[in-house]
Image 1 (cartoon, rainbow, N blue to C red):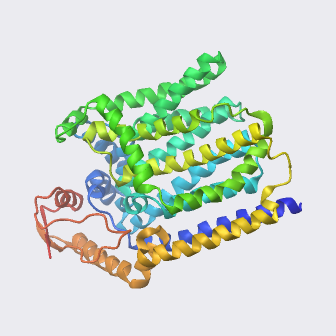
Image 2: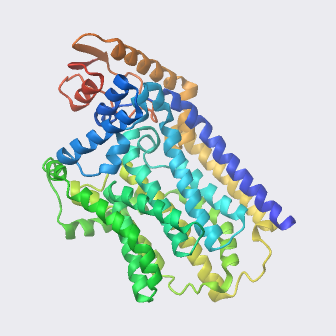
Length: 492
């Protein structure tokens, strides 16, 4: 019993840290406001709600948007459907729920996926599973590459964070189905729906799922496990159907016409490896990743000890190599479509998968040591050891010290400190006052044209984009359609 108490305390402590870190982020959300594509993609849904207050009509408006964009701009129909339902459709105050939705999607998918892997497959103790999950979520929350596009701007997050989260859930469901988990028929139905959704979403998440389906089928054929093939094939068909609808959209060619330079397929693949090294090792890797690795070590060692000799860990070099290729593949769709490595919202989901791969590689490396070096035979939890307690306490102090220094110099370095800075300084409230004033002007306007002051306050987390002085700018045009005004002009 004593052996398990320390684990429970640590897991509980990490859970409290995650909840405390969420508080300022969710408080500042009350000042969040739609912008740019939020308006353009939800025009029909918003007008439907204003005129009918019918959910069915709102969905009909979303489907109309899907059809219009599929023929005229892009084929990602499932993402477009979600983007058309941004929370401000039902009233601007609803937009405050955006961070709750995005953080909730990341949290739920992560907890479910790691539960399937750690609890169901590896049968680790609940506190160990919870500790690893909380370390992942804390790091994902605080160190997201583009925090605005990851948590606060609905359109960008809905196109990437939500399909990514559904893809993570899909992988967990497929593992449950293959392992003959209970309620297989229900999980199969959910897996088919998730596969269809991901196939109709962004091309990065879709490509990753396509790769994983292909690998699963190849392994099943190679090992002659016909039952696995039958279980994988149905969700795969749903995925491929949606993906074909996605890539065959007439709008894709129209959008591609707006792009200047595009590398060939071969060059895109080669550049993907280059940018993977550049971003992962040169731009993103810093002291926080070192803290992440050292935080995970004792808990992943417990996972290795729980698994014991059930696994051989025969390919210590293949796992990191496969992880590198996996991450590199995530850069390819953007490079091929636009000639660039991607933007903040694209980097966000690459970052989230990078964290999963860090966990995988640490586990595999520790497992190889356990298997081939004869370590870890003691069944007592290493987390209970006094040395490990000191290790974790020192690690916590180092994290607080270095994190405090970085936050003092750059409060926007972490999501929570950025939110606290904006709340304490009053800039969040000032931005909220500006957006409230603009909303009242737009809602009460009865003229064909209107002039709106361009935002003066631009909090790091809340501000993504604004209208322009030029009334012909696309952002102005999107807002015009949304509020049914002929001309909106920005003024300083």
